[in-house]
Amino acid sequence: MVTIIFFCGIYTVLILGIAQAAPAKGNGVTVSVNGKVVGYALEGQSFTQDKYFYSRPSAAGYNGAGSAGSNKGPSNPDYLQQVKDRIDSFMVHNPGVKREQIPSELVTASGSGLDPDISPEAAKIQVKRIAVVRSITEDKIVALVDANTEKPLLGLLGTAKVNVLRLNIALDELKQHTAFSK
Image (tube, rainbow, N blue to C red):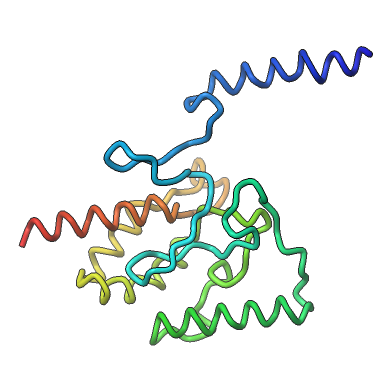
């Protein structure tokens, strides 16, 4: 009885109170453009158009309610075929990139299936494609990637990463500024 009362009542109220003290009141960190919510900063989203940076593949179909990996190991033939297909697709959309240059995170799904970030290297390997499609210089897009790269905590903890949603929003804003400056 004590355990039921604690976990169903006291613990639940305690966690709710902590969530309400968080900046988003426990509702997640939304990303808005012009007052409209376009996504969540901590949840990966699918970007398939060549004018955008691609996200990490998702075994969960980018569904936050069904967050999960595929549970297929590196010796599973279905998994190997899936990775091969992703590599082939990436190379078709990014001519000039060699197979060995493709960062693994662009062809393998994360454990949660919802990873919102890619490495700066994974972003920079896509720059040429985006520059051609958007008619923007590669230098401007590389600078945008650098500006949107989150450094490791205290320069030591973790790795550098780029939030794909925020980077693609900045890319759209860059195109608008470029159009106005012509």
